[in-house]
Length: 318
Image (cartoon, rainbow, N blue to C red; front, side, top):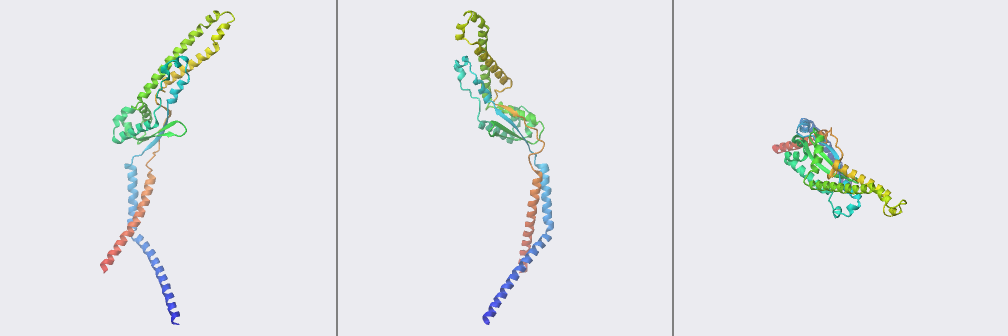
């Protein structure tokens, strides 16, 4: 009987402990709610203050940044294509086979852009203005530049970041001019231009030679007899006409490249569009994140202050 009573007492003690724990939980939840109710002004105050401050910073302190990209291409192929036609006079000229460097690696262009960004960070606006050939005010609108290779296209994307869109097209043209006229590519441009002029002179010389032969072809035919069998062994008028046509086509190509300045390392493929909507900052996102963060901070601060005050009261009551 005594053992059964002891077991009943133990079970009753366990039940009372469970009830006590449950009561404590209910009391804790109630106290949490009371803390929030007592400190609601603090929480709402921090929340509203965070919204006002973040909105003010976004509107007045953070500069908007706009971005747009232009596509450029290397003109190495344009120069190399001139080599596809080689008349006999070129093949016999030792200078015709010289290895002309017509393309600079993408890393060199990246280095130039990095130099521009460094000068922008240092405030060397006058230097950049001189390189791009644009007013200093337009340069001050620039935030930064970046370049990347467009995969499987052979094109290069130049992204322009600006704080203001005024004079954006002039800025974009100035950037391409600055790239082609930079110290990295000036020597290459001169070599390409000289190569094209040299190629044109040789092609014209070969064309004059072919025209002279064609002009005197009738006289040669008469000198070999009426049947012209002897002439057919050495001369083929049809092949001469094809050769003259090919020479004229190549001269036209060289003139086109010179006229459109394709001797420059890079040329424009697609102009950038003047941006209208800022790329950053995202003002709505900044305000929203600040508000939520402030709300959690306010709740944490309310419980922390409550905890400090309780411990202080306990210490005073001892």
